[in-house]
Image (cartoon, rainbow, N blue to C red; front, top):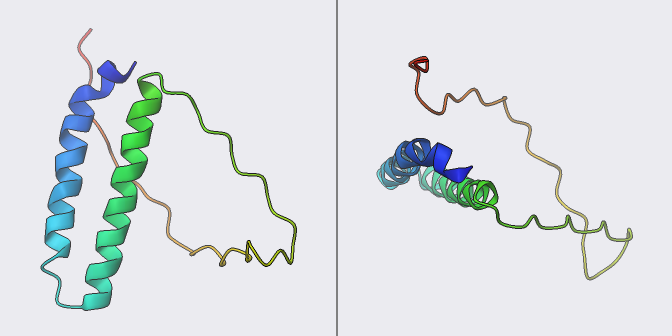
Amino acid sequence: MAGEFDKDFGYLMPFLDKVAAAAASLQDPAARAELSRLVADEKARWTRIRELLGGASGRAAAAPTAPGNPNNPPAAAPDVREPFSFTVGSLRPKRT
């Protein structure tokens, strides 16, 4: 199944590389660091997605920890973000 998306990944990963390169030119150090982190996280996600599409085994989700466990402090509140609206793949309709 992964082969079906090779062309799309061929566009996506270089695009993410361009965004990472653009992040290095940002003047604001906090914005530069955040964008670099976001792109790195995104590349890792898409690499894993590609692996899963290629037949890799899924990972079991980590079990929640008991509250008050000093070895596992509570997670920070999630960031509130606007929903993404990306278009990935060809914008041309498939020929039949």
